[in-house]
Length: 360
Image (tube, rainbow, N blue to C red):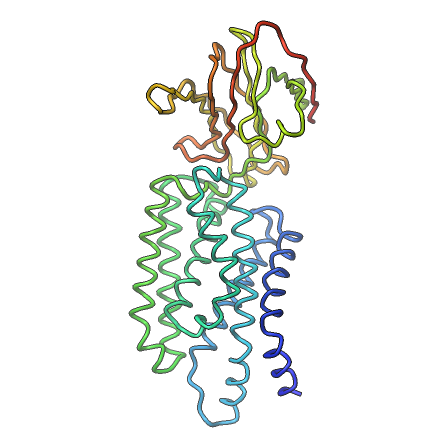
């Protein structure tokens, strides 16, 4: 029976690998919703523990005993199991982090996560190498800790990020130490290379964070837009925008037609985990074509309350909006971009017709 399963798996290796990738991605997108839901975190932790168990299993030396033969058989399937678990982890991280930041500011980190997700299908042969295993494992632990600690401590900022980085490094060094005791000579020979990989990845992630490239998870922009007018009545928001064609709706920089001196409004709904109450900022910026630089024109901040599925809603106003290219960053108080809106403003002599949208 074992040999039949083994031969079948070898014959369909590529298809099984692809199905593991797609299956993990679909499963996670259907089951995982919020970063602060305990069931979602339990599933992520389960994946991380599965990957760790596979690394320990692959690190064991195989002898000639009956138990060793059983381990050898299990080792043959460990890379496939690890691949499935890593596919699930990187799909979750890519979805969560892509919701939490602007691609324009966070694209290096998002492309890295997406590359790990897609490349996971072709990494099976490398999973037999301990330094590579540890490097990939550290990425998953770090990606999880950077949004788990803000949820647990109910705080965000540089201190929490560096604390999560230190915890990730310590966990990996403890894990390597466990591998040394449970594994064989091959593990002991590779441990220094594995530790160097962890240190190198840590430096890379710190550099990305300092340059505001890592999205500010667990915050996420649920909705946002630039409108001619926003009014609030209790829990109801009325958003007034001009009628738009489907092409204009798909544009990355829609055109807004205003009369001279007209006020524009930015509406946003930002999700924050339960009990994580922070401030968000609407940062209005104008593109100076002469200097080729973005100029800060206004910053409007307001506190948000965590735990709302649709995000905590708020809006800001900007008077004296001049013609040209504008962008509004929805960001944290320390300048980390949660989302970005761009509009090309054109001054017209008469008002345009407006369409109202009511959101509760």
